[in-house]
Image: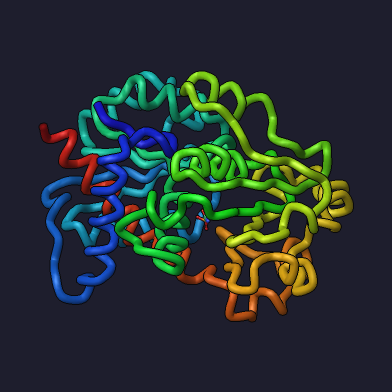
Length: 314
Ligand code: CP
């Protein structure tokens, strides 16, 4: 069974196919009805809050002719301790696919290992691959050709600032390698990438060649893309005060952004916290493409689901 749990779960040919389809779906959204998921019901099992991911998946499933069923751990028997094995087996008898947002990556891996339907990672503490595919599509759309992520992204420098041990930083390490980008991370020493991403890269046979520094100006120099994310990830609320203090030097301000290339893009997966990880001035500047990123979640996820549905039908 084909699942999408991490950025490199699709081959290069499949990635090209998915990006091409996302581009087509975006262009023809108002003119063409798609029916890739006709007669299908896909579950959305969310252990964590979400605006973009939940809505874009639900709308996307509807637009592909399917139905979405939103579930959470509190109102299902998962909250009362039913095993992942039994839950995955039972849901496989009802649903055609399962999209999961959860905490530990091992939870989604366990679901996938016991599911007879495709499982999609809608964010774990380790990776956020749907966001990354939509972001790569957004960069390619602005700097090249959205149907050709390899040609458009190769050699581009992406600088990620702030919590460089978070799932988005991990995903950029993996995606940067996949698309031939130069990934530069800048954050406090205590928030350098953690062994779990290195273990994953080793398991996948991917060598890591990102740069890590605690000097934000050095990291941003000559960047094509400057990226940041929330400093206090879901589940890290108890560390809020200390995180804000240590990450403050890595806030994306107009002054810091001026160190990047003059045509550099500013990106953020949202939700943003103006005045913390990014200034309002940067968010209001023409360099910012955050709403394109959010929109592209819809087109890209539709293409991913259509690809998984076609693979599970064969
Ligand atoms: N970027 C992102 O995943 O947004 P949500 O948490 O709102 O889904």
